[in-house]
Image (cartoon, rainbow, N blue to C red; front, top):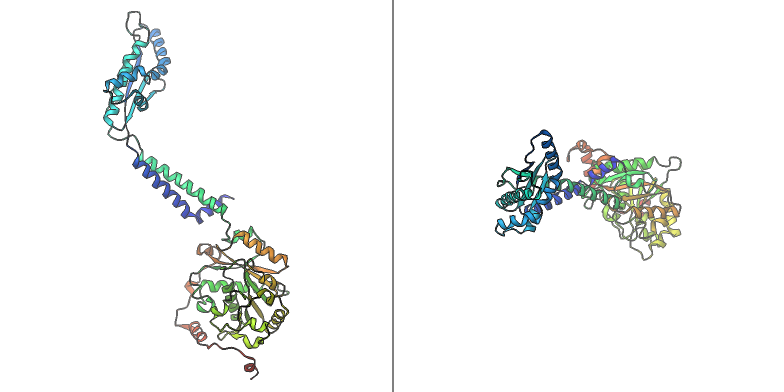
Length: 479
């Protein structure tokens, strides 16, 4: 992955990044508020060698003291100093607790020792620092050899007294919150990238490119109103989804110019990818362009075309296949268009056998002779073999890919099953694409939508909706 790919993942999964940052920030805040505030007080001791009448003696004494500063820092944290200091505090703090509360440091290139004490009680922190400093000053003189005149060779001088701190030294709220926010952002970004790596669902054309070389000839955005208005080519002819189906129609018409297929099976890998609505809207789009189109519901397991189109579906393809009717008896015109619909009819117990029968081949031949285009809605590829059975009887296959509905492995298996029977895949249709992804591929036509109730388009729509539904029977045609 390149930098642009990482940025795209973070933009797509920004909620995960924000959630990680908020969770880390909340935990940091809770921990910070739960921690008991600590106060720190400090005092400083200056160590020097006494005596020395010449510059050379002073220089030697200064060098000696500097070399001993590490030892003095260690002495400050030993029982020799801590036990008397603890007794001076009246036994309120043990020597071990004093050692934990102390922090001793040496100022660089000096003979100054800084003694800091940290405690929940600011007054206790002050007292510990002062008492330990006093005890160090009293102890150090006895640890060094006396000078020639009998006085202590090294003397520690208090530079300042420790005072009560007015503000706690810890926790540092602003630092903790900033650190928590940064860690949260990193955690959220890591989770987002991990989810992207582990995510096997097909969500975009980029995902398709990793699976197959088949072209994407249509992209249709997701609309939660699809269930109520499945045929948007009629219910919302100027919407974005209707325009997407028109682009699909145009792309389909430019495929195989030398030998353009007159029959197309529309299928998918798994249910709920939108194959039936795609087939229905594509059929309407082709009819709007002036072609004589028939839409065949060959999903003999869960037929839905009759329901979507609002027509009678109790007789249809299965009625013809078992010889109880002719095609003319069951084909129904849809509104005042050049689209006819052949519903599925009764659900049979042997769908695959019927679709692979000689009777089905004869039906398809008759339909291709009478119509410019035959659109066939078939069951999904993975649960059943019906679509694969039909593949050798038609001019091509359109595979609908439901964004965020099908996994990459499922789509790969579907395409491999079609390749195994030498099916001609015309292309893929990305369906139910999120608005964010759709904006990358298309444009909005909302500003060009005509007002409802005015103009020729509205009148045509009202006229189309008022056409009575009727079955075209053989006797009627001959009459």
